[in-house]
Image (cartoon, rainbow, N blue to C red; front, side, top):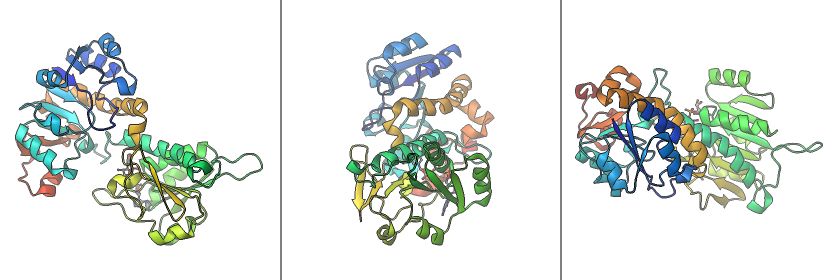
Length: 370
Ligand SMILES: NC(=O)c1ccc[n+]([C@@H]2O[C@H](COP(=O)([O-])OP(=O)(O)OC[C@H]3O[C@@H](n4cnc5c(N)ncnc54)[C@H](O)[C@@H]3O)[C@@H](O)[C@H]2O)c1
C-alpha cells in the first residue's frame, strides 16, 4: 500500500503520525511510505531519519495527499486539507467528529474512509488510542501543578516533596482512571501526600493494591470533596463519565474555602471540566486566577511534550496501521472488531451511530459497507 504521512498544520501541533521506527515497520511489511518534508521536526525526527528508515520525502502536503492510499496523521483534517482528500482514501487519525459538524459534512462529501483513533475500542470497552494521551496528561498534570505551586507563578510556594523536617504538599486527585492513576503515581514518586478519589470501589481496591503507601484512596462524594479541598495544595481533575459532560465536583463557592495559592489542574477540561470555574486555556497562556486559586486548564496538554506524545501515540497506533496496510481497510475491519468500531464515515455514509445522532444524519450500519 502507498502510505502518506503529512505534516500537521493545526495551530501549535508538533506531533506526527508516524516515527522513523514506525515507517521502517511499514516498509518491512512491503509498503511504500511518503513523508512530507519536516513533518517530524517538532517531535525531534529529521527528514534524514525517515529516509534512513526507508521513506521518501515529498516537499508539499499536496503531493503526500495526492499519492497516498492511506494517510496516517494525528489531528483531524482542517479546512485547508479538505480538498486534498480523495474518494476512497483511507484516513487514520483523530477526528472527534461529534464536536465539529463542518468536518463531518466535508468528509461525507469527499467520500473518504475515515477511521478515527478515538473510537477504536477493545472488547473490555477501553479505548487503546486514547489511553496514551491520558497517560501523558496525567503525568504532566503533576509536573505543571508542581511548577504553578511556586510563589513567582502565584502558587502557595510549597515544594511537592517537602524536605527532611518539613511536610510535603498534599495532592488530591479526583478520578482514578488513566489520568488520575498516572497523576497519583507521579505525585507519590515526588514524595507528596496523595489522596485519590473515585466512585468505583473495585477501582479503589485495585489502586490501593498497586500504588505506594503515600497514596490513600477514598470514596468520592460531594461531602468528602468539600472537606478535602480545604486542606490540599494541588488538586487534579481527572473524572470522566463516558459520553457525557464532566460533573462539576468542585463548585465556585468552594474556592473561598481553599488555601490561597492552591493550584487546580483540570485535565477533564476537554469534556467541560470537573471544576465549575474551569474554562479552556492554551499553552501560551495556561493559567488564570480566581479567588487566589490558580487554575490550569489546557485542553491539549500532550501537545507541549511532542517528543514523548508522538512516540506514545504511535506505539499504540502502529499495530493497527500495519493491519490496515497489510489487509486493506475492508478486510482488516472485517477481521478486527476493534478496528471496525473505528470506522466513522465511509464513502459518504455515516457508519458510527454517535456521529449520526449528534447531527441528525442518516446512519448506515457499518456491516453494510464491509
Ligand atoms: N486536557 C488534556 O490534554 C487531556 C488529555 C487526555 C485526557 N483528558 C481527559 O481527562 C479525563 C479523564 O480521562 P481518563 O482517560 O483518565 O478517563 P477514565 O475513564 O480512565 O477515568 C475516569 C475515572 O473517573 C471516575 N469518576 C467518574 N465520576 C467520578 C466522580 N464523581 N468522582 C470521582 N471519580 C469519578 C471513573 O470511575 C473513572 O475511574 C477525560 O475527560 C479525558 O478526555 C484530557
